[in-house]
Amino acid sequence: MIDIKQEAENLIAYAKQHLELKADDEIYVKNRVLEVLSKRENKELTTDEKDEIYGLLSLMPSEINAKFKSLLTKDSKKATDWFYDYCVHNDYVKKSVLDKNPRFEVGNLIITINKAKPEFRDPKKAVQGNSVDGGFAKCVICRENEGFGGRAKRNLRTVDLTLGDEKWFWQYSPYGYFNEHGIAVNCEHIPMRVDGSTFGKLMDFVDMFPHYFIGCNAPLPRIGGSVLAHDHYQGGGEILPMHKAKAVYTLKHKDYPDAKIEVVDWQGTVIRVVSRNRRAIENICKTINDKWVNYDNVELGIIHKDKDGIHNAISPTVVKTKRGYEMSVILRSNITNLQYPDGVFHAHPEYHVIKKESIGLIEAQGLFILPGRLENELAAIEKFIDEKKPLLPGYTAFKLIYDETKAICARNKISAHEAMQKELGSICNRILENTAVFKDKKQTVDFLTDMGFKYER
Image 1 (tube, rainbow, N blue to C red):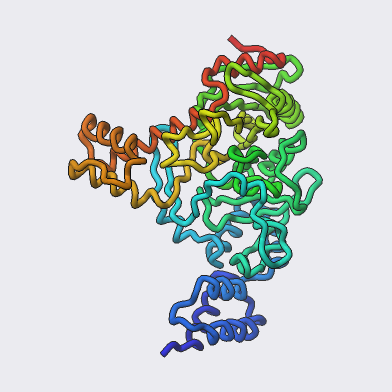
Image 2 (spheres, rainbow, N blue to C red):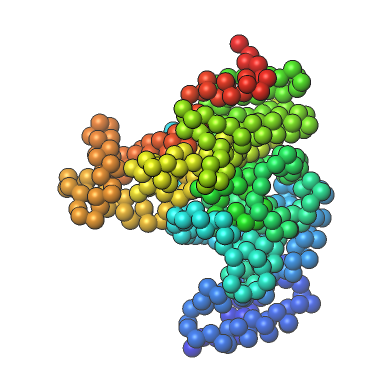
């Protein structure tokens, strides 16, 4: 027999310890929790019931905002630490699930297998924006989702931001890809965009939270995120590998003497603009963006616009360092052709068994999120290799991975599991190279010198 009164007492004690439940609210909240507990049909609480209970135990959105703002005036890191911990304690951020995801580093890349995230293989759905059934939110990331039970958002809490002169808000991702992964979302439901104002808003964010990075997905299918119908950025408390990469070439511009323009030693095509001068950063990045969105190079397969629409876009992402603002501009193209119907500058078909989803902002910066199915599939491949067995029917799509992992195993005299990690790193490296619009860094220099940037010898 389940003692629901004791269960309720335990939950109230938890909320007082971790969720700042006030003594004056204890009776009311306990009665509401008892109501949910008494209606359940199973011994274990369902996910929906947990969501409802944690929503009841959590502070109201106004209280969360007030506490966050108060902490922010004193120390921005303490403010985000408190808010992130709160979202873990109220079970919106599923940290216990995230901590079980396999994660390892190979070369200059981080590889994760996200067992909690569904595989998202259709880029057309991103344009639709994942509209919400029921409720009054227009899509899954609208602020109107706060408290909505239809998508397990009863325990969602958000905090206010001002970026540019616009009202935005910040929330943490329930199944984040990295430490303190969150999204900054425009309060207005408008499509994703990158324009002249984007760079200033990104810098506004790191001015508030210098311990975070923030970036914007390219606003096009296949090279953008999973929700393109609503303007938003992604960021958090982990500096991703691309930001640590060094420069191959450095350029300057006579109009911006206090800025450096770096061609980054990275698998993708990345231009990093470094300066303490915000205006210089904004103007240089706008110049690069305006040039790229209208850029054609038929010989390289780059066509900015055709009957299928616009194909060129950028993904800007910024960190604040001792050098000032470091705004990286990733050049992207989603053009397709007969040979590559899923994208010329996308993961090529031989790698789709590992990654067919869009290569968005996070992966472009060196953190690969691979589908959860791979945990079992790759374990089976490893077993075939360890036991010196051929591929079984049903695994033919993994022939390249099988052959290459087997060769790594023999060459390095290591286990199949160790070899598989090296193989995944190699494949993700090749996928990033697929996304590079300029395969030679000197082509990136040529692109920049066309705009008046001068190469520093």
